[in-house]
Length: 366
Image (tube, rainbow, N blue to C red; front, side, top):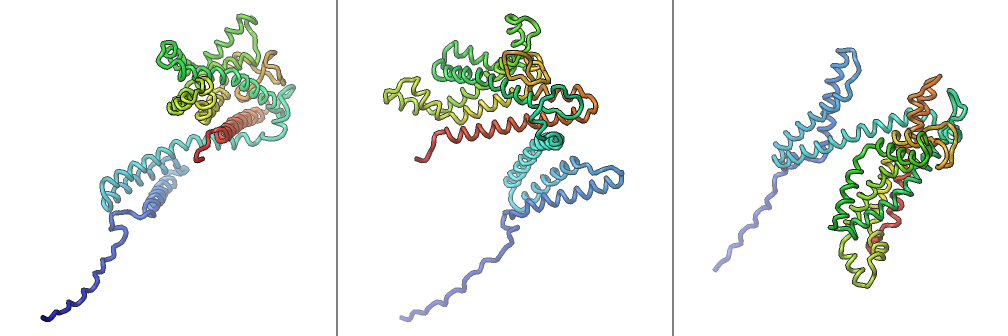
C-alpha cells in the first residue's frame, strides 16, 4: 500500500485593507473633521465680512462650524462604521459642544475681571483705605478687612448650627415629625432672597438698638441666615452617604452613639462636609443687598464688628461703580480691582477646602 504525500498548501494571505474600510474611523479623522469644519466656515464668514465691510462674526463662525462638524461626523460614521456608532459620535459631539458653550461665559467673566482689575492691583490698593481720598489713589484695605471679619463671624455662627442640625436630622430625627418639619423649613430657607435675610437682621436688631443701627455683626447675622440652610443640606447629604455598616460595627464594639458620630461618621464624610461649607461661604461672601441694609458702608477702617458701619468688598465694588467722581476711570478701576480681589479670596478658600479635605479624609488602601 503506497501512501502519497499531499503537497503542502500555500499559506493564505489575507488581503490588506485600509483602516477606513474596516468599520472604524481612525483617531485622526475626528480632529481632521473639526479642523476642516473650522477652516471652511472661516473662509465663508471671512468672505461675508469682506463683502459687508464689517468684522468677523466669531460667534456665528463657531456655531456653524459645530453644526457642520456634527452633520459630517454623523454622515461619515454611518457610512463607514454603523448607525449606532454614528449616533454615539453625534451625541458625544453634542455633549462636548455643550461643555464648550458652558465654559464660554465662565472664561469670559474671568478674563473681563482680570483684564480690567489688574490696572489697580498694586500695593497701594491693599495697604490703604478710601478715607479722605477723592479721585485717584486709595485702596480697599478697609473693605477686605470688613469682608473677612463679617464672613468669618457668619461662618462661626452658621457652621456649628448647620452641622448639629444635619446630625440631628440624619442620626436622631429620621422619620420623626419634628425632623420632617425642620427639613421642610430648611428647604424653604434655601430659596429665600438675600434681601429678605438683610431685612430680617435689620428688623431684629432694630428692636434692641432702635431704627437706623448699622454694624458688622448685623451683616454676619444676615449672612448666617443664608449660610445655615446650605450647610444643613450639604452636610445632611454627606452623612447619608456613610454606610450603615460602619455605624453598626461601632455599636457592636460597645461605642456609644455620640462617639460613633464623632469618631466614625464625621471623619468618613469630612471631605464632602468641608466642600459644602466652602460652597456656603462662597454663596454669601459676594452678597451686597443684605450688607447695604445691615452693615452699611464707610470709607474708614473699622475692626470692631459691634460698633459702627463696616465696609465689605461687594459693597465697595458697588459704591465705587455707582458713585463715580472725577476722574471716573479711577472709580471704575477700583471697582474692577475689588471684584478681582473677591474672586481671588473665593479661589483661595476653595483651595484651602481641598487641602483640608485631602488631609483629614480617611485614608484607603491600608
